Amino acid sequence: MVCRNGYSCALTTEHSQLSKASGVVVSLMGLPAEPTAWIPPGYSPPADQKWVAIWHEAPWYFNEHRPYQYFLQALDNIFDWTISYREDSTFNEFYQKGCRYVKRDKRLPLKKNKILSKKTDSVLWVVSHCNVTSNRDQYAKELSNAGLVNVTILGKCSESGKKADDAFDSLENYYFYLSFENSLCDDYITEKFFDILKKNVVPVVMGAPRSDYERIAPPKSFIHVGDYPGPEELAQYLAHLQNHKDEYYSYLSWKSWYKLECPESWPACQLCQKLYEDDERYQDKQIKNFTEFWNKKKCYGQDYTNSNISLDNF
Image (cartoon, one colour):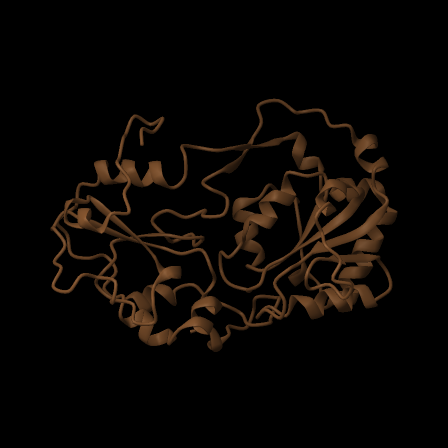
């Protein structure tokens, strides 16, 4: 693999090359309940070898699929670096793949009337993962039952079970899209949000705290459910925006001033570069207590206001 940044690294899945590798990437998603069973018995990593943990699911996944606390404790003193959706990882922005929204030098003109003329329906949500910890299904149902905006729900978890194969072809006919995450955790913002930002539709988000969205998205580019006491109050605001087109369009006007810039291929080339540049290869393992590192970021159960920490996730 030769990267645009001038660095080159060889990638392999051959375990016979383990002792020769500069870096070893381990997916936490694929580890067995006995997490150290994949380490060769008696294996002692070379002093300059970096071990990297990679994961992209929120804590609920691990809590449901394996003995949680024991699993984390078994990862002590193994990993130097991390790759995940978390902001405090060595390499973060897992779902945005390192891309950033940056201010344009010159304003890009948008066809406001053309964008608004396409709007024929209120709210769309495509969902296939049901009964998740965030309780997003119930929130969407109550939003619809408020009777103030029409909420179209498609996919495996919808009452009709109607397939959503072509739903995104007509996405810009809707005013809003529900970008609801399966878990309400710090930094946990998945690809659905970034995909929606690329379209002329306003995402309504449920997931990480508002401040996490503000860190990665342009100003006034989304609506956060935590800003409203409940689904009915949110429905009132969405209905208000539908009836006040200029106010609605203010949530899309950022597209005139911001653009998406993507760096070197993510994450392989950035990891490759860091393996070359790291000057502290002989230090002790950086993550001595993996449980402590894991718990630095919090989850909030079903509290979409991101106020009350849920102990069930830890």
